[in-house]
Image (cartoon, rainbow over all chains, first blue to last red; front, side, top):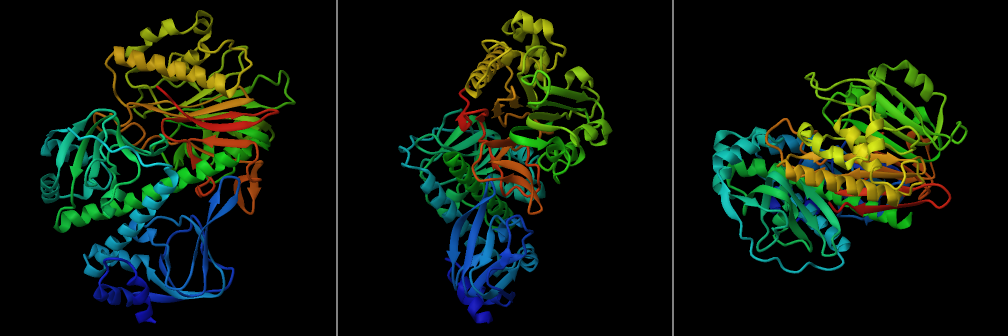
Length: 301
Length: 301
């Protein structure tokens, strides 16, 4: 049983055999009768599910109380992985398409290991971030009819000081967990900029942008607004994690102060930022899903 | 900050919108889900029902009582069915700086005009803008104003930009007037060097057409905490369907893509599965009546 859970986890890129084996020891078996719910949208989350046998139909609810099928999953698939990154409620219904069994990686146990800096847990979180980023990329690709024209050179001034960075970030949720050593490590890992409205930020290698003031916006080539990020937000997180640009523009929407992080810093600071990154990825994915639901609802209305 | 909702659709008992759901407007007095603030400064509504005398004009109710304790409101809500509604729960800073009186309660309406406005947000440094805004308000409208708040001015500016305050209106004509009002405010802010984040989420309706905006001037341009209503773009959600009510143990719209529309600053249920967001910098335009229609437009301001 444990070995098979490890095999399912091994499908995630970047997860070593050792990490898979360690995590598989945490998995507990589950069985759900045909037609029963493994979980419902908005349920509190209890962990990541790995399917050994049977099928699962994943559906989302829509305005007007409709349902839209999002995926059909079979043996070897995983579902409910968002919760390991943000601890949030379920974002879809998962119904057993026949008797379904497999393993559940418990959220509370996983969170404890992650808090303790367990290497296997951190590796799984990193692998899940890549998976969620890929899913966001696919969704944006589906929403964007055409890729935008390439951006010109950034031309941003490096004018935001480390002290200013610290003073701003300390006021935002999540960053209040940072220690003086974290502030120093973060300041050394990137550069502060001011950027005027309209400036594009998606040139070159994807960068993680921390919004200190003002706002940035993801927009498709045909001007469909995907996401708006305000102060405290991590913008460009999915492209940053995937290492591949989105088929969309990242624009400064309001005159902004930004902190650009080209790569996560090492050590504890990097781990703290990575946790925030995981939550940001899930939050953005949920928002993109609602954009798609809105477009669908308006098209059919 | 405040909370509000708008509804156009099949007649529904008022308490099903403002009292009964787990996150009904009255419950948001002390326990709003998306706003960390108490909303204690009163309640107002404008309701349309075809059986009322002068049915094109709304029945209005305004009370400075703390809404969740307002027995008159609960008694009214238990008996009155509405086919259209704009309701508003007023929240103000708890530092004594705001005037609490009936005249300052939303939705704003002037005699003879069916067009009402509810506002969630505030215009930063409004005291500096007020004098410059007076010339943009038509004399008859200025004469009828009973409040001098930013929200009262927004209503007066919108009314000053429609052909005839007595109507008739379409969602398009209301939206044009809102856009004109926003452009006036944008110019006055620039003239006075005001660039602080200022939200103007509105629900504007004459009972037949409804426009809900989700817009913030200079979003994210905060000087320091506490941030206006949080650091997220103030939200505006909606759901659609044939009929709103209790079905399968849930308060929700049912009936697929019917003509009914319910918009609110936050979903009326903690489960947001069947709600989607009006996009930031966008507006939802709804025309009821014999040829119902609904669309999303972006605000060019």
